[in-house]
Image (cartoon, rainbow, N blue to C red; front, side, top):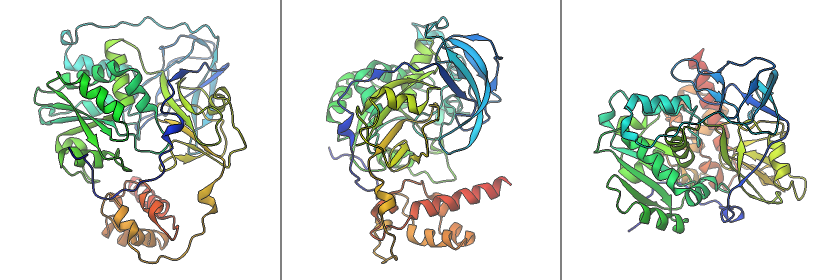
Length: 439
């Protein structure tokens, strides 16, 4: 059967061989942990601890505010040192709870369940909210809010995004291979929230044949779960592209996936749902890829939320040379970092470190009207024109040419022979428009 895909996209160097075949290793942090109160879309959490309090792993240390908000839980046991401003990946200083790790790793009592059917839909959603689960592969929308559909009968598909199309990142792949019972169990939890007609589809790119074979075998007797083989292409894992490739349904910027009967969650989020509902464990850890040619030991690690990026690099063997570029995330959609004094949050998936900053060495030239950016754009936009409108601050034209439909994947910049910063210009204009609407 021909792999499923979408129109457009590019084929960057994958770099996954550096870490994909090495099993996940657990890292233990140092003495100080910093828990940012704003780790997702929605209202920041509010502390429920005070200086001097003793906390355990899995204990809620900050409560949600409103429906679109999530609690924060301790990932180590120790004493609350106080409250400070700490930097996030985009360079903003946000409120944080500082905990001194006592190295004892005492955790709260967990309450696993055996029979899912003994619980109501509302009770399951409450468990997911109480666990503090957010989307772990994108913007970090609270998962309980995504699953709390006003019309659950309208949902036809739950798509598990196992494409992991971002170069160098392999954490989802390793989770799929190392703990398949969590992924299938978590998907069954989500399907329990919807009617029998709703089907779960595990979407895997065809550059992961062992994962495809494993899940086809594990789901052959599951009437509500199937595997979709996706063509290896960036950005195959983008929500709109995944939905179109699997179902043929189209989503634009004014819509949510639920408007076309679909919900999308990535592998890490589904795994966390399993742990929260079936094992009673709140979200305090995440699997994190450390990769790139400047890293001594590229691989995937289980890291506690609140641990600093610098500690992760040191425990991963450090650098083999001074890197010119460090990215939180992958090279296509990640954030370049000025330093590593940043704590891990729920939403960030990787550190990618390069000996050379190849992008900085590129020389921009004039557009030659070759049309490669149009061919690459998965949203069928005209990136060269949108970039021109952005550079000239022409908001009316930018909107007329559907600039808000851009998904900031970077495919246009990657394919541009003139090396124009198309995606950066368009993204800046989109943010400017959003800010103006908020004001």
